[in-house]
Length: 288
Ligand SMILES: [Zn+2]
Image 1: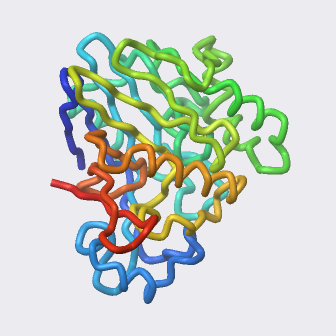
Image 2: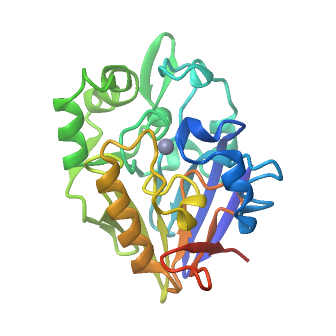
């Protein structure tokens, strides 16, 4: 499945790899079905009538006309992930990407918001028993702070599997660039630091012709966290830091015209953050 948005002269396309529902507490331990059922604006797009939250794993292609940037590369095929349902997946992701007009060799930049297993997978693919870069003509960008954290803590966080399959082959091919976490990638695209979920986590801001959007990675896992801002993810490296960043990001963008695109938000995926009436510090996502 795919979705498209126009931000000024930039086209953003999301390519879905996976839709997930049925275990809220796997990602958000506080998000019991009963509690989610009590938040009516989540239905029908972001939760079902039983209170099960809906997530997707997706990549965004940011097409400026000059540049083709893939933001987050999902889980990938044939990977050993340490998360059982994601092991050895076989999806049509690359065919979907090509069908959207973006064959892998046409991509010039790959930008991962962070280096978790579900955001770097299609960095590489398995060919004749070897992991090779999926996007041979791209520079792969990583925030330096993110890179340095994972290299230092590789063993304690089980990063070695991710590195061997999805990172090192890119480094070995000479395609990896470490960048500052507020870098301007091109005139329409810049990074915005959003640490906490991981220490070097970044969001990706798109600006063109007075319009803007922000791709928020795992800074906010699910739209429910706009209302329950305090609900933290079991995958947050530092939950208090993640919470502070999430709250600051929401307060920065509330009632702005910036389209908020969550990397795991299911369709319609993008919307404008609005305050909930009479509920101080609580918000919802207004989608067209
Ligand atoms: Zn994720």
